[in-house]
Amino acid sequence: GAVVSQHPSWVICKSGTSVKIECRSLDFQATTMFWYRQFPKQSLMLMATSNEGSKATYEQGVEKDKFLINHASLTLSTLTVTSAHPEDSSFYICSAMYQQGQETQYFGPGTRLLVL
Amino acid sequence: DAKTTQPPSMDCAEGRAANLPCNHSTISGNEYVYWYRQIHSQGPQYIIHGLKNNETNEMASLIITEDRKSSTLILPHATLRDTAVYYCIVRNSGAGSYQLTFGKGTKLSVIP
Image 1 (cartoon, rainbow over the protein chains, first blue to last red):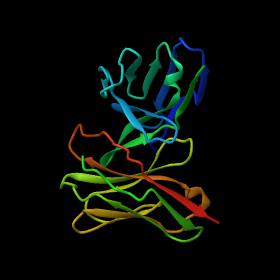
Image 2: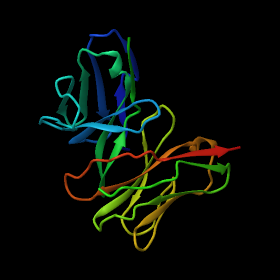
Image 3: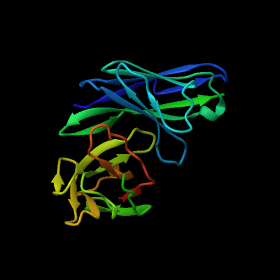
């Protein structure tokens, strides 16, 4: 149990285009999902917290108009990178909260984005 | 949330136990200790968590000192597939306090 998937697993796009990444909890419902970003040889950095049916909460320094998050159902959250630029190239990882006694985050496999 | 300190890297012989230490001397009474690992180019994998008592599951054991200021993750029989970066994270147990702050972790290399 507690499986989280992401799609696509990797994407290459041209500068200026928008890219949508999906995060799904496959065998449980998640009222809260998170989006992280990881640059090479660095640790994960939290970008935003996504709550089903409400607006996402963004971390300081993350542009909410550039990284659009939608959490329309209890099993799906999407991250759209709008007008992507080469500096947005990174490894994007989502996680979902699963009730296991104490709430525990389970992570997706990640999406590697390369903007040319 | 309390900060954690981990050694940057460790080696372990295949088949031996891997003991990964974590210092969290500023931990407060309502904070849990979580361990995750990240194999290269994958998302983090949940391993185990605990509050006060030692915990064991099919992946590992978590030993927390009586004063809760440090803990050790034990992989009883390390395999090559256990090579990864291991993160020790302290997280508040309060409702709404779900965020995880990832440090640099310990890079464990399991050697044949």
